Figure (spheres, rainbow, N blue to C red):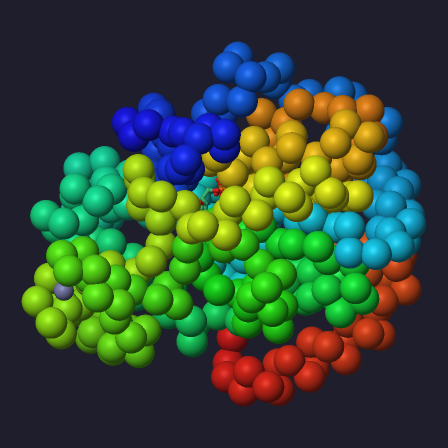
Length: 331
Ligand code: CNA
Ligand code: ZN
């Protein structure tokens, strides 16, 4: 297990315990003790159950909170659940999640393909998986475009994402508004000499089932996604200013099992409303009185939310415009 250094330290590394992959480590360390499991009715003012009669009032509350924003006060935390509708499996959903598929791979245990030591010895399983992540395979969905609308409307302070699929960028949200906390495939580096490798070279090799090598020293080239025990990008430190300044926190499509990312959900001021939207309850969520928890499919929730906000037409136009711009088939 790699050491995890708290934000007061000099470095932040992904941290895991109990057999989780590099950028999918589990367990929180904030506060030291395990939080009380999240349960129905324990989520504060608006309850925690999903679906049915209660859905509308909760989404209305979310819409109200967004409407109440005057400036760039919205901070978003996103996870793999915002991209499943684009056709990219998350890790933990039973059946469809990446973990469920791993038994077909030549790895001693699932998390090994994101461990540097395993990668250096046997990079093929990682690149076989990476092939599926080619940016041409996917395009943003309504959830990404909802976040884009938050930006267009001048409400977004920053979007922190754990995703490495680049779909937030592809939706048109500028890099200055993004913190890709677990890196991305947009750049790659030689693991021997540190030379940067062009993204197109990487993909050309990976798509041909090859293993990318450095043009200078023939060392193994690794995309700049954060592996187990690796440093998080410097931009992650923006959280030190963003979270204390946030006026509203949206947490979307994440199991909050990766540290140090997960603990950010507790870094906003206690008076700041937090909205958690996920398919299922999040075990480590520590309820606060102003929380709103909306469980269920994110696409359904976001579409309804957009409707409640009166942004449906704007969203339709945005999706049309951006889809035409991307000019390639997606899912
Ligand atoms: P996770 O642990 O797999 O959790 C995803 C969460 O999203 C789960 O709680 C799901 O129930 C929920 N979810 C999935 N689909 C939907 C949906 N349509 N509507 C509502 N909720 C949904 O993934 P996390 O992101 O929490 O964190 C772990 C890793 C996974 C991070 O480091 C990611 O980088 C990594 N990951 C990224 C991608 C990607 O880039 N798209 C894909 C798979 C894994
Ligand atoms: Zn090199």
